[in-house]
Image (cartoon, rainbow, N blue to C red; front, side):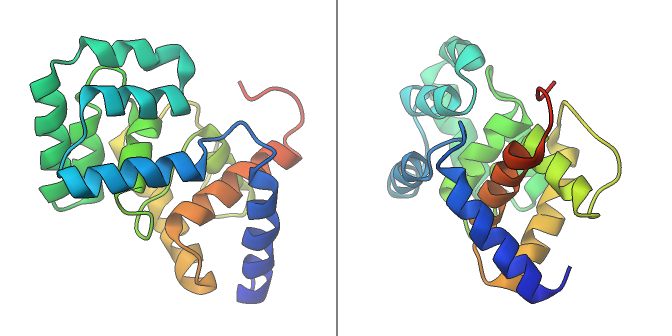
Length: 179
């Protein structure tokens, strides 16, 4: 896809994002501000992120000791590498890669995006990935964030916004149910 077409694609689908059931960008920004100023996230903050991302599994976050939540999120900020950051966060109860992506996207939306089945499907439709996936790990996050950053670099949008646009695109074009 040409850069101008990608620009229009992201712009059009970002407008559609408000009509989806996706994580609210304003909430993600709030979590990011807290994360950057505190240097970590608390269990309550992680619960709120998980609830925004995946209401059904958020209660699992409460199984984590408070000290572990702070330790893991502090370490996730300090570690080099996307795989390592996502892998660390998925060590917490209630965090699979899509929910963990909310944490890193909140911290740094220029480099990270919220990813899930819809984002993968959109990247596959656009020719960046092959095949469909329904569950994700840290390696799959790395697979998705590469093309997301590529699109961000070509369009001037932040990675997090490209992720939102990809999510909205799938919500717009998918026939039938998600799973």
